[in-house]
Amino acid sequence: MDILALRPVPAAAVLMAITRRCPLRCRHCSTGSLPASEEHPGEIFQRFAGTFAPGDGPRLVMLTGGEPLLRPRLARSLAEAAARGGGRTMILSGMFFAPRLPPAAGEKVRIPPAIAGAIDAADHFSASLDAFHEEEVPRESVFAVMRALLARGKDLSFHVTGTGPGDPYLRDVTSAVRREFGDRVPMLVSRVKPVGRARATAPPPTRTATATTTAEAVTALKTGTATATATRTAGAALTPGTGPPPGTGTATATATATGDATTTTTGDATATAGATAVAGSALPCAMAAWPAVGFDGTITACCNQDVVDHRPVPGHLRLGHAGTDDWDTVRERCLESGVLRALRTYGPLWLAGAPPSRGYCETCRTLDVPPPARTPAAAFVERRVLDLQLAGGGTAFARRYGCPPYDDLVSLGHPEREHDL
Ligand code: SF4
Image 1 (spheres, rainbow, N blue to C red):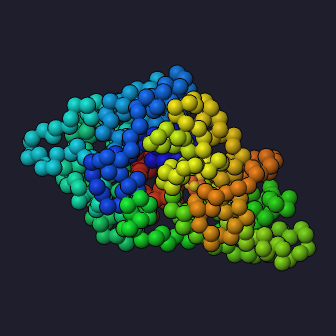
Image 2: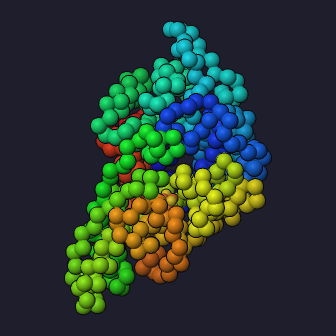
Image 3: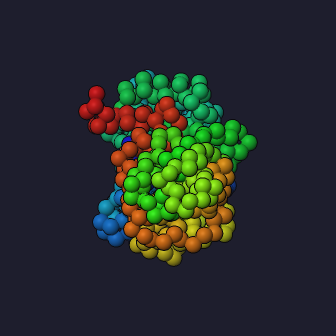
């Protein structure tokens, strides 16, 4: 929950995909990873992490892949660099190292020493668990490793994936985790996205967003009546469940062209209705906040797999390269880019002047617009959008980008949840 609460905060964290390789062959793999997939010298990642100034690095370094624990010594050295920068580290693993035969009662589970060292060096460890992973690694084996880590005091979570709210697997596995770990281990439940090998597996997302008040407020911004309605813009854009799923490029939104009298300053009702319909496309992208270091060291503004994988990276989404740029420079670009700020505030459809029916990430990847003017009204809305996301915290983020009704499971074991109870 604490990690997800940071997700919309620009440059609060950096994702590092340190290898595309993975020994598993999960059918839904978003990175299309294989045992012989691309892998680049570890020095690229170490050089970049070496630029975290003492006490002034990212607050979180998230190590992913492929399977990051195929490079346990690299993972460990990056966790140590993150700590020197004053940050924490999280590792996300597919659990390839879990024993295929679960240990017998009373028998100790064996974790290879180098992998145990990397997990020890990280502050948080998360295991992927879903029907596809279970075809590769038995659930009981994963549970055995997680039990051992929990007994050692490790901070843990599960990344659980299913096909949607009605997926019976999700009901089964979330109940099993809750039972097994006594509600001490949180779960982020999300849907399989049609990315990588999952293009042939996953159903297309069906989420729909309604953003009438967003439309009113953004039209008001355009026509100079921003202050009264700007708050509604942010609120509407962050209505739980209205956000586009990251990385799908196919989310849709519907807007109601209200012709709200407060937005009509031109006297041209037709033009106002049209502008309102486009303004209804406003849906901020919270994923454009954490720089992502790709397998080859290229640093992008988000972790959308199509952005990470395709070259050249669109100019507005490229933040640099781990082999040549330092953290300060990347952070500055992330914070100051006018287009990224606008993506985080209004989203790509509004920026492109596109109707809500256009593909969300797809529109972003082909975006070719100048950064919007940095007016006081724009700065106000930007701040309000961020504040509302912060107020919603990790649970609201999970509701928007994950799989309701399972969003609340990110708070399992969190002191605030205990307090609420
Ligand atoms: S491609 Fe654009 S809209 Fe999609 S997640 Fe990345 S920054 Fe956001």
